[in-house]
Length: 242
Image (cartoon, rainbow, N blue to C red; front, side, top):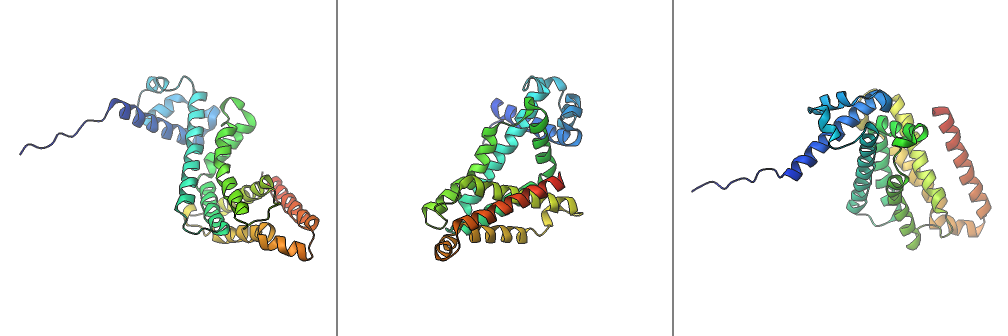
């Protein structure tokens, strides 16, 4: 019996595979040397292709950097959405725990590239990742928070942008602190206590039970002051770590 012929890789698949190789090589070189120090020749050498091949995909180093940035942030968004889709617990705080674990570990593992991302955003608008890509990523949290409000799990008067800043800001500074003090494999560091504190913070400040307690004695103004103090603490930590 004649063996069945295995179809060869399509031309489109070949092009997409080569582009992935280019983007992965470029990310490594950009992290190692920065945008200004990276050379297309070195990227081509790492990718195992000729320098001219890169220019058949991207017209310039800036365009290549933008593609690397967009691929990274779009990938994080898809992964975060996948994490939320796989979570079995229906309540907000259980889902927040899963998203916080994903984000904290992601920032630690990708610390070098994320630092490069925000350095470029501060210093070189030509190669800064668009706000839309960042919005798509943080919108994963937004959807969970709004769902929690709709289900009556969170305070109806909670301000979304403030909760979002506390969530991402606190985890990113915690990740930076952990990353700076780690000596071994980043992925093996125990991160759950940070996540537990984050979930406890949200339960205390934004949970529906906190709203009932406020009605029974604590004032909304007092809770707002506590959140403002937490925001100031995060800003202070940011200045010390930057």
